[in-house]
Image (tube, rainbow, N blue to C red; front, side, top):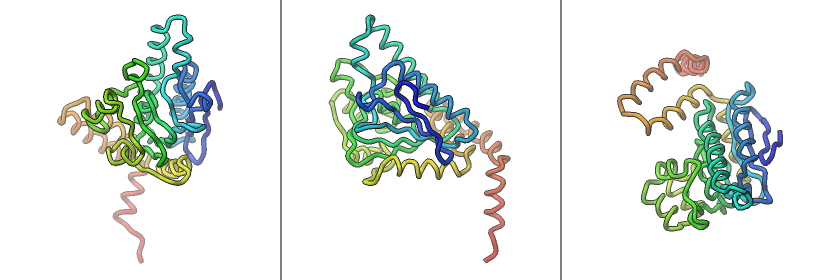
Length: 255
């Protein structure tokens, strides 16, 4: 599938959702935002998919929202509100899909691109990648979950240093700050696919519930989280994957 700025392909049990506007640094306009949401739904509903990979074609992962499409809109306020809402709903959906998500980032991750990246569970970055919020440079404020997700990833002071202080992070700094999972010198998409394929071959129910429990833990009390964990692990132990893995653990093959 290749639909208005987003490419989709299923490989080794992994859905590749690829931002595909390389001439615009994969900046997202309204058609691309809608196509991204459609790709997330397709990956969620596919019985052949057990993990998701988010990547970008061209020289950069994602430059955020498409400023050119904003400037060309007859009603810029209405257009930007719709763009932010449509894209954020797609990212919120991605964040709750019961399948692990890996991001492969390279070149530059800016603006809403940070929100795309932080919807993933594991983030693999090319060593030359730069990370910046970029909103203030054009007089705008964060959208697409950046103001919610960024301080949770790196802390409030560092998030404000990026959003207000204009700090641009290198990949190594992003790794040290806890913004990404790994930094590689090899082909970043291939490295991310290897991780995603490994997840796709594992206990998908356990991975999906782990991402849900961790991502929703910010919104409830410690007691609510504990009760959710107890209920979830009780359901997990009845899953076919858990039964097989537990049996292998307690009955290892004779040597």
